[in-house]
Length: 338
Image 1: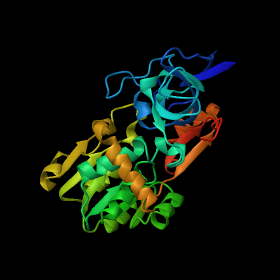
Image 2: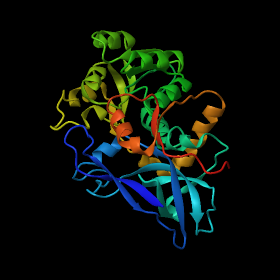
Image 3: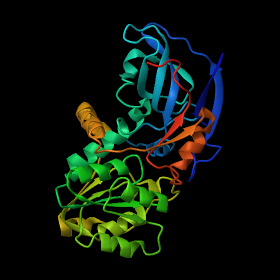
Image 4: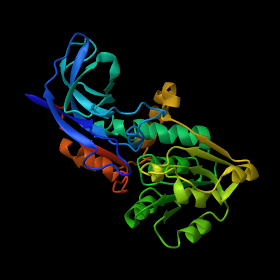
């Protein structure tokens, strides 16, 4: 029986394309002592992975050419030589983009399939959920009655940020890129206002929505959208910087208005962060997120692309804004129900 994996074929200049990825057939691996054989069920595609396709120093090591790409995976143990796992266990971890792989027992964590759909371990109960929770609560610190603006508001992180801010009693303004997303944010997630950044009158709509200024700006996109939001910052505003997806595929250095004067004038805090900064507090965050879901206070969405062969297409969809909520690739169904 053959296995299959996806390798980085070349470093993209600008937007990745079909030449960026390579599908490779490999021999089916066999677990050694203290290892397990994992069948991939869901793969996570995330914006940060674009940065790892570049050479050079960053917060995560770059992918190597002709080597398999790694990311968040939920999988099923199909063979175990570890006393800590048995066949049929559902696990998650940072693993290869491969249909099957062997991993050391300490690399993955067990998932309880009875708590929530297993895919949520790559979304609301995984890295995106923790990113939203800690970025907003630790850096943003929203207070009742404050205005919180979220860019990329219909994405996996953004939609959770907005809802958590509402739970804290804040007024929430979401920025997204389609009428479908705008309607969803307002009608389903109860955002106070949602604005399409593609609208010709985006600037005036933002000014109207932020007539009392912006106390917290959760930054996911960068670029001209954020330049406009900065104009409305209140004194002592807080800006958690999670991402800047608008510039990830730029061939040249992204240039824009300098923010120093704005930050000084408003005594504002702008702080970049990585979700790994909060690794030792993950259980706290995931427990709270799960409690909000159970209480009906927190909704989530998943856009699931079916088929391992469609993984590159799904990844490219991140930069076209095609997804609502967390974007995943479904590789296979579990062999047995747990």
